[in-house]
Image (cartoon, rainbow, N blue to C red; front, side):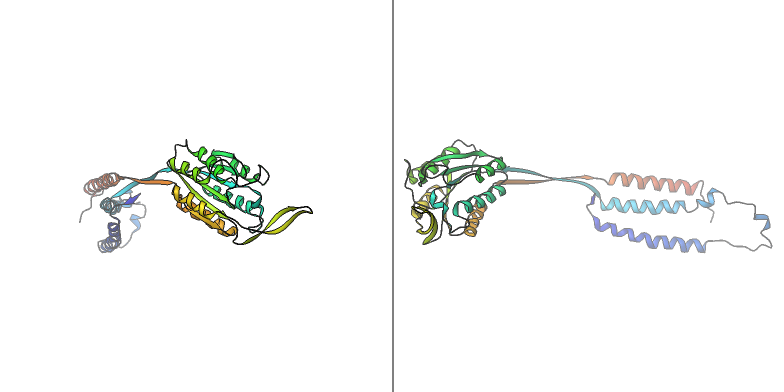
Length: 327
């Protein structure tokens, strides 16, 4: 409960001087006379009227307090929110080629990409998210789903060697578009992460980008890897050795893909930089939230007003009948 005019409640303080005035007035109105002995009155007990002589004044004080509350207008307030939310359909396209084992991101590019992508998925509770992996070929690791626990488990199992080596960026993007093209969602996004240049597959990256554009799909491209040389596991006649290999990312093509589809290209040279890229994408791709505040107020002054009127009537009746006093 709240009051429409709470400032009027300060009028309740006026009851304090009113009560003080009554006490002072009562003390001055007490009659007195002298008797030689009060022996004859010892057996006389005061009746109920004596105890109830202050009752009319109590009723008056309560009725005044109720009138003040009525003026302050008590109200019952019911308030709630009507929320409408619409998620975004997102496909993560992840490069799992051999170069993703480079250790310029710790422990390597693919593990860093999986960890940061997992954090991204966890924060997008209202979205349907799918996972496509690509190297020399491409396949869907997880279709669009809101069951993010399943998605995270499948993402955890992703590693190099699942498919033939190579970098088929166009094929990976085309597969992602195929997963999104029939989606009824108004917002469809592909986040494509790679560390190389397209060298495999039958579909050129820009052809896949045109396909994405035709279906209204935005593509955010991420080039992951340091600039210059990166320590990379390389198979040699003496076994696996770590060698510094040149980082070759086709940033021109990745930028054109993003520009063509209304997305954006990002470069991540370390794990924290990759995490920041996903944060930026997260901010740009917030799902729609429409919140409507609904408030309903109900006036509650009537019971207080009726109670005040009843107390005033009772006081008037008592003062003129059973508790009538003679000046």
